[in-house]
Image (cartoon, rainbow, N blue to C red):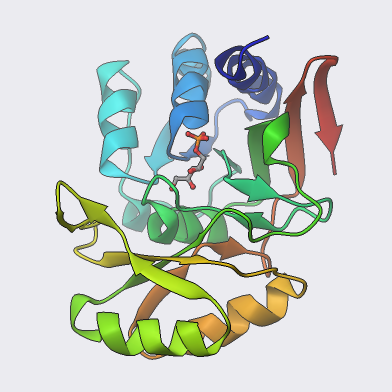
Length: 222
Ligand code: 5RP
C-alpha cells in the first residue's frame, strides 16, 4: 500500500469515532484532508465542525459541511487530526502543516483527541522531525537563541524565500537535532519562552487514541 492509501484507511476508520449530532474538531494536513472527504459522506449526522486552519475550513465548506467559530462553541466531542511523529504514549510532534497553534486550541476544548497517521509516524523517541514553534515575528531571533541554548538547531521556516506566515500572523521556527526524552518537560520549558505562541509538542495533552495505518491494516493504540 502507498502512504496515501494508508492515510485513506485511517481516515475511513476515524469515522467510527465521530459522535452523531455533535460538533467535530478537524485537523490540518493530507491525512486530515482524507478524513474531511470521508466526513462529507456522513455530514448530515453531525451538528457542525470547528476547523484548525483556513485551509481546512475551506475544504470543509467546499463539501457543504458547516464550520463554526470556536467562540460559538462550548465543547467539541472529538478532535481528529494527523501528526508528524507520535510515540507509544500518545505524545506528538505536530505543525509540519503550519497549523499547530489552532490545532492545539481546538484540541484543548475537545473531549477526545483521535490521531490518524500512517505507520511511518510512530517513533520511539520524538525529535527526528524538526520541532515547529510558532513565534511573534519581533521575537524571532530572541526565541531562536533560547531554542539553541536548549541544544537544538533552530531554523526559520521560509516560503517562497520569505518567512512563512501562519493563519495567525506568526512565524515558524523548526528546531532540528532534539532527542526529546521528556516531552512534557520540554513542552513546558518552550511554552515559558516569551514570544512563543505555541510549540508543536502535544504531550501535556496528547492523543487519547491513535489509528495507525500499516500494511496489516489499521491498528489502534490507546
Ligand atoms: C499540520 C499538522 C499535521 O497533522 C501534520 O503535519 C501531518 O500532516 P500529514 O497528514 O500531511 O502527514 O500538524 O500542522
